[in-house]
Length: 305
Image: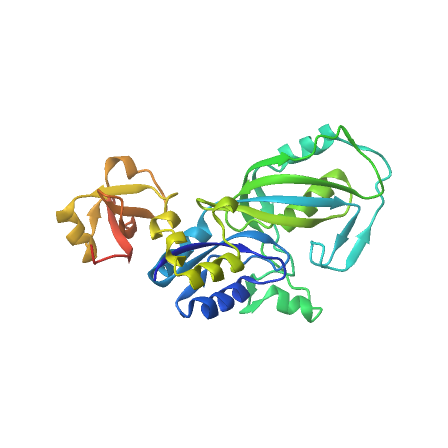
């Protein structure tokens, strides 16, 4: 059994919890998730089965989309609704729609974020949340992330009340913390804030509409039609630039040969999917670090075609 399973992650489970449960349901060990989703976050969690675990990192590296809710008026230790309140400031004047839209425009593009203390980022071999649980605050390196778009999902002209809540939709790069983005939105408006709700609606090419719940998976396993819902490995690689090859070159690729980069890919950066004329990806290549104009294999995914 191999392929990509688009799982709907329920609230209250870690990504690791999801893998553990699926191993029991499917009775197989070779299962991997495609990046950590916080327990409070629901939505799209692509799961790689069998040989497809080789491409998990490419889903992790792909862009993501979320729908979230930000609450203005108080911040928390975890930057989401599960944490303890650390700062509170009542919203003492109406916030206009145009003020919020201006902030969202200002946070679109490349921005700098510092990972929250309650996160899975490793510092000196230890995850930040482990330090946080011991009450230890450590210096965290900032990172550049890209916000492709942010849309306000609320049609009010004015927002009033001591705490203000509104929904938004964001498309972003790998490594973006939406919790931290919610805090940044509040800071730009002059108030403490946190992310009060979040659902991932897209990961690489997989959307909420593609996803199955654990109950639906169990039902399909019982009925014997589970494999029908698995996506091929190519679903994890659809965002990568492609190079189609013929049968003779395919044999070289299977043996890890260095290839000439075609003209249309000379200016690309990052991984390149090498695929057959009928759309099967045989390998992932990258620009050769020492030989301009050539590319070398990173992973051979198939040698049985």
